[in-house]
Image (tube, rainbow, N blue to C red):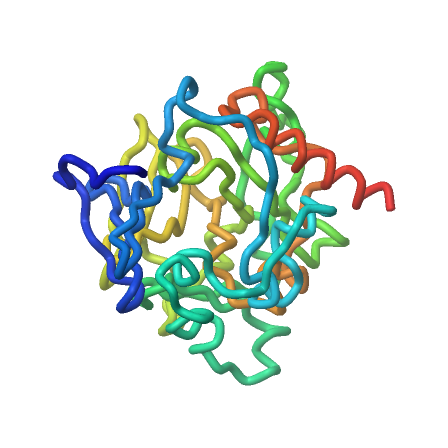
Amino acid sequence: MQDEPSTLEGLREYRESPYVSRFLCKTCGSHVLARVKPSGQYLVASGVLVAGDIPTVQSVQHWQVKGTGDGGLSTYLPGWPTSDGGCRLEVLSGRQGNTTESHSQRLVHDPSESRTQLQARCHCGGIEFYITPPDSSSTRAWSPFADLLVPYHTGSGENPDDVKWWLRNGNTKYLAGTCVCESCRLGCGFPIQTWAFVPKANIFNADGSPLAFKGKTMRRYNSSTGVYREFCEVCGANAFWHCDERPELIDVSVGLAQGNGALAKNFLDWAPDRVSFAEMATQKDLVKLMEDGLQKLSAD
């Protein structure tokens, strides 16, 4: 932004580091702005822009790729310039590299846990939970097919045969993918949201108790009738999406996962053929790049 916002009313400030602050919607947790010091420059989260204000994608850069461990989503946008010089917000502040450890660096787990649990937490640590591998309880949930597999606009998402489509690789992993629907875009503040489809029976609070949608900093936003989103009210991290239609199958925000790499491939199998709700995307050029990258990797 060229000028300072006229008002920050309705936004909550999260001081990520001494040099970077993020401004989040108090109601839904969506990321709206970031401010860097000492320049005072503001950056806008592109997911909250209305369609007419979104510029054409000229290039894609991936920052702090080494911090992902496996390339993260940059894996699906190959061939574009990358930089490992640190988080862009920290670079703009004049700092050399990130002044704070990433949350993955702050967590130290027993290596054996990576095979039995997928740890997850938000940036500030107010939300913590873990996921267990698929087991017999993973088949108890029911759900219509996700748009990731059967586009809803085709009208054929019903699942009368009770296919357990969220279980992959011989029922050893969970399906994961990307979504660009309006609700997810506005709910997180960014054009692409990553989700893993995990039965509630396989998600536990950090203390080992069954998942409860409450906690130190967890808040709920009803994005529509019978549809719920949980987020951290402090740092704004998206955590869960779930609904009354399929209460036992939960969408888990993959960005919180502390797996062997950002894609957590030891637990997750990524859908290669589609970006969910691609027809609703406001940045269709970016989504096309993502879909091309997904399909190319699948073909290879």
